[in-house]
Length: 192
Image 1 (cartoon, rainbow, N blue to C red):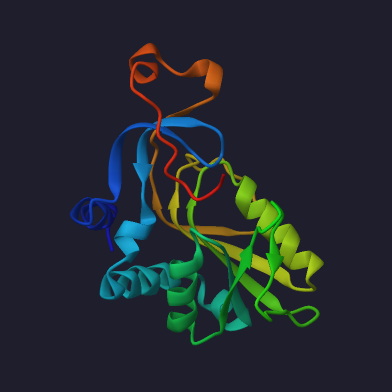
Image 2 (image 1 turned 90 degrees about the vertical axis):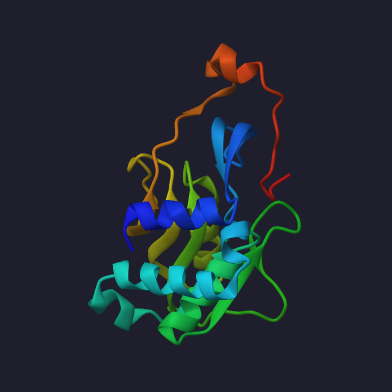
């Protein structure tokens, strides 16, 4: 899949939003990718997951024991990547603000994990999820995501394989341009 094809998928599903958004990272942006919308069509979600798996080096794919995703955003794409890899897919939740495995999910000591996210901006959620996997006994050997919004600057401490790199500017609270500040802010993400 080309970047243009991927952007077309986001636009066709009305997943590429414009306005003034407060991202889960705490940064502001004039663009938001609502991955839940692009993934609501099961066929499209499967296509995107298969394309994402194809970005992973073959030797890495063979080492993956299980797929783990942070809820909510990574849940659907993580499940579909698990299907594409023919591996189990489980997810982390934050009932108390810290990621944990729940619902009877567990990792075996040393189990090799592919972390799967929808969008990575600063990498904070990903790093928190990677730390949670380590606490649970697993070892994240790589992360894959639908979208990298970091402009290639994110360091997760593991190899990172995004399907699409998008460079929409983001701003700290005190850096928001006046034209963006004039638009009412919306917080569409799942993180409170």
